[in-house]
Length: 449
Image: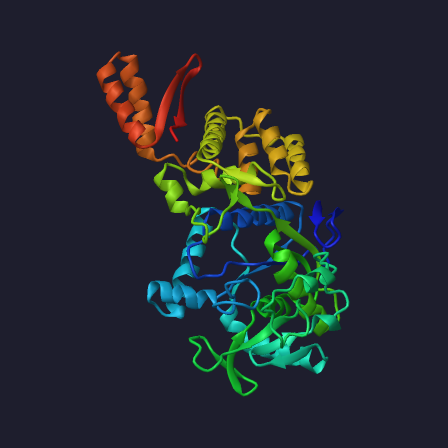
């Protein structure tokens, strides 16, 4: 199994620290608003990663976090906490906002058929541990205090720029005029933010004798250390996290524990709409239920995502989504036909070919091409479901008894040339998403959509 490693900028063979417990951390959402299709794209790719690892005989242990405090509007250390922003927008408490959008995310996550994480961790459950990590960094000489928080001194961490290939000299030269005079370096970042007098921030904890809250980046370093240990196998996230969030995670973790934080960093690219990045601020987002209103299931969207590569740029359109829906329907009907024909033997050679494609840096598009151009048995499609989670075979083996009865009654009506009854039964089947095709070798039922 080979994966592109952002750390080395090349495709490498994946070798876990322990095959029986492959430690994986997935950056989760900031739960201040609805997760949109752009947000869910990366989780679909990481679901493929987990499924592929399992089919290669590994046992993943994955942690997914929910950011419910400390993520400021700028993704760095400026602006309003996104949870506070969401609370003011909806006239609710930050706790109500966090609970509502956490539940929404997890509900849609399940509708997409994504493999559940082994543990979901809320940032607010790890604040005491955050403080201890800041204490450790202070004891080791990596921090300094300003009027608005405790900052990490990036000049004390010589490899700070390495992960994102940052040009720190250019950053210094291009620093804004209003750059904080209290920060020693433009790349320094907040480990802990103090709440200033008159500042409205509902989530607050006492630290160093003042009320405050953790910086965004510290939560991931803390959760990883608490739940997975000091060095993990894989860290996943979006490419937008490379230059700030993940760079800062590495600095915090490796400065504190003097050990490599992660062996493989895997990042997904954006999808766009009308060739623009999907963004809540641009107002060009779609939620999964908005796709459903237009006749597309979450699994149709998942099919569209997996037709591309996680590192590639994709432009979303409803025309392409319709093509993905038709492709998935075609696979479902091929699986139904194979089941009715008794074609159930697994093609081990074909299975190996498909897995080899995905083992090549999660190349699902190549695997899809193999599926399209080969005869597949019902068991082959069950393997496809195991690998991609598209529910191709769902509802085929356990066709409801009343549907089976209607299919039989339709055939009897046709044999008696009672076409009125046959048409009535056809309408009833259609209402239940089933159509019967008459072929030279007999009748075959299919899904309508």
